[in-house]
Length: 389
Image 1: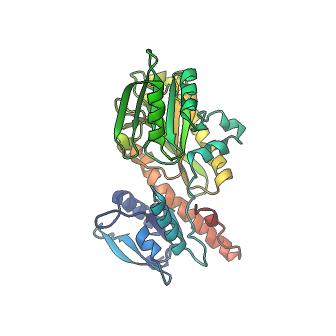
Image 2: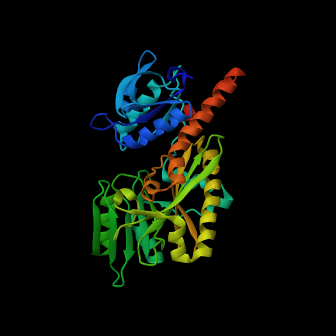
Image 3: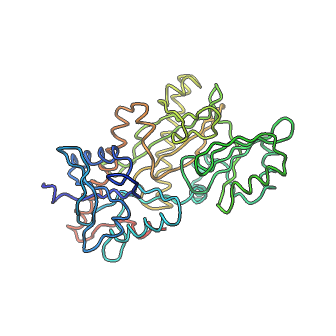
């Protein structure tokens, strides 16, 4: 099959300064290489260029196999779009929407590899309908007032505030009641700056929390004891992805450990990554570590289809789990646009390769399925009309 005849997968990105105008170039280069092996042509489409698509063509970037350089060119509208945008405000969300509409056909937005999940609160509520999974959810309510926060602190001694939408632990705040009855707060601002406050009175804490949350929707949770023996916060990232059969598989597990003094283990905040089973073996013993990793794998393969039942077709998920010293497992977060940094940092081996190959393998599966249905006159059934916010 010639490159021109191959199905086209467009990777939609918001764009960035530089040439070419996008970040994560190494990741996209590896996606391009895997796509070519699977009979696909892959291009990167910065959203400003994608939003200007007209006449059935769009400007974007492809990787030259002979030089490894990115080259701008004109492409037909993609058969499938792999959305790797991370909008941080209404302007970027509007640009993403415009791009998906411009890349679509017949007045419909572009067909996506998998849809994004809504906010954390919607995910939490959706899992309430899954009896076998609901008990793994971290108890969560929408944050309403300082009085609500003080009640939780009086009952549990610690609380956690986090934005209902957002990534990388930005805007998260951990609060605890000290022995003297005053309060301490640690967190990271929306800009990523660390914060540590001590000796807050109840009134001062309420005022500070009001300013910290502002007009944004925040969620309130009890602060769980999710620390290692040496006192570092950590979680277990499970990367689950669809493969070339359209089925869910667990690509790998990695522990993300927070830097000293941090309340979140996100790698963007300076955390480190380790292989999951050796880390857990050191914490809980070999036998218990094997049980915990097996349980997380089973949970991951139950959570993925459960979320699809509520929100439509997904392609991959980063599921973050916390483990208390008792061994109890909690689902902390689900992310439909997961990064691969943890697997890259630990070397990853097979998991690292599968993390990049799987999106292209699933894209190939969807496109083959479309061709088969088209031959039967049924077309390409997807959920693209449900994707735009």
